[in-house]
Image (cartoon, rainbow, N blue to C red):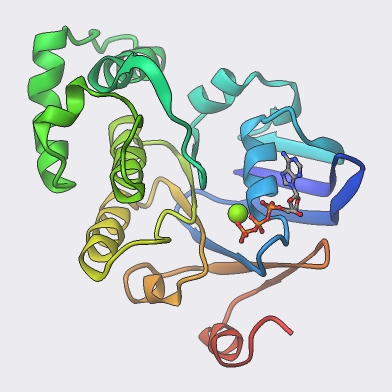
Length: 244
Ligand SMILES: Nc1ncnc2c1ncn2[C@@H]1O[C@H](COP(=O)(O)OP(=O)(O)OP(=O)(O)O)[C@@H](O)[C@H]1O
Ligand SMILES: [Mg+2]
C-alpha cells in the first residue's frame, strides 16, 4: 500500500497542494480528477521522486518503507510506475535496448532466478506485446521517443507497464489526444494490465475510461485540497456541471 499523510507541495514558491492525505491499495483502482493546473501531475511526479517539488509531509510510505528516502530507481524497483503526461525524448538510446535494460534490471532484481534476456531472445519475447499494442517492429531501432507522435509515445509508455508489471501504475493522461481507435486500444490494454495484484491510478479528463475500468475510489484535487469519494453519481455530476 502507498500511504500519503498530510502532504504539502510547493514549486517555485507556489503552493500546489496544501494538506492532502490519501492511499493506494493493490487490487483497487483509483481515478484522480481535477481542473487543469490543480496539481495532479505534480502529485504523480512528487511520488516518483522528481526533485523539482518542495514538500512537507508527515509520512509517505510504500509497502511500509519510507518513500521519501528512496532514490527514483528504488521507487521503481518497489513497484511504482509513472507514465508521464509529457513524455521525454531521449536521443542516442535505441528503444529496444532501453526496454531490454529496464526489463532485465527490474525482473532480475525482483526474481533473482530469472535470467537476463539476450538481445535476440528479448526481441522475440517483445513481439507479443508489440502485436497487442499495434507497434511496428521497425520502431525498436528508433531513438527513444524521438519524433514519435503523441499516440506512439503513449503506446511505448504502456509497453513499459506491460513489461515491468508494476504494482502501482500511475497513468498521467495516457488517454489524451487520441482518436477513437487509439483510445480503444489504450483503454483495452489498460484493462489487460489491471489485475488483483496491482493498483491502477488513472489521471484523466476523459470519462469514457469508466466504460472500461471499474474504479474503487475517486480523488478530486481542488484548490490544493483533496476530496475523496466514490459514487458514479458524483462523476456524473462533474461531467454535467464541472468541478465547481
Ligand atoms: N516543475 C514545475 N515548475 C514550475 N511550475 C510547476 C512545475 N510543476 C507544476 N507546476 C505548476 O503547478 C501547477 C499544477 O500543475 P500540474 O501540472 O500538477 O497540474 P495538473 O492538475 O496536472 O494539470 P493538467 O490537467 O493541465 O495536466 C501549475 O500551475 C503548474 O504550472
Ligand atoms: Mg497534468
